[in-house]
Amino acid sequence: LQIKQSTSTRLASCESLVTLRQFRPFLERHAVDVAIIDVPWNGFSQAVQIGRLAEACEINIAPHNYYSHLADLHSLHLCAVLPNVRIMEIDIDDVPWKGTLVTRPPVVRDGHVWLTDAPGWGADIDERVLREHPWPRPGDAGGRLFYGMDPGQMTARPR
Image 1 (cartoon, one colour):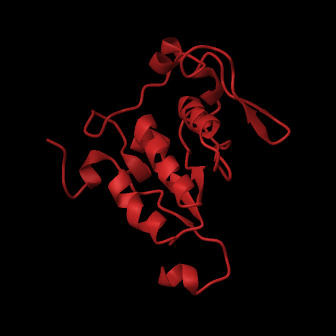
Image 2 (tube, helix red, strand yellow; image 1 turned 90 degrees about the vertical axis):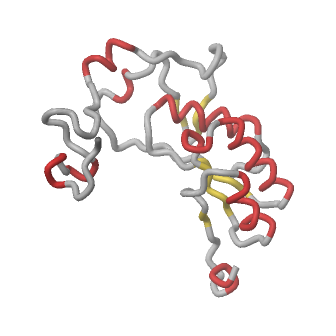
């Protein structure tokens, strides 16, 4: 709360929180102007609960998302069910095959993302594309870890 009170700049935060219980004090104390919700990490139903609590506290939300188009669709569905969405993040600087990972990637037109009328999340995962671009797990032979590290560079090694 001290940070918010010390500046006239609108404060967006909470993207690393994962439970409603963690969000509650920030929302009830109005410690943020925009609560950032990470839908893939929170899960859709919990993200809705967090968004509803934020709306009851008269605080806007912004889905945090730098993942795949499937995660874009999760965030887009959250935006469709909550009245207090300020903005939705989409990562456009990604691998060149990102658009082929799902059968119907989100459509961005005139600064808006359009929800499809397809069932479920609005698209299916293209399993062929997944097989063409495997993501090595930590500890896999020759597999790289986050930040370009290989297993030999880690302090704690996976079992």
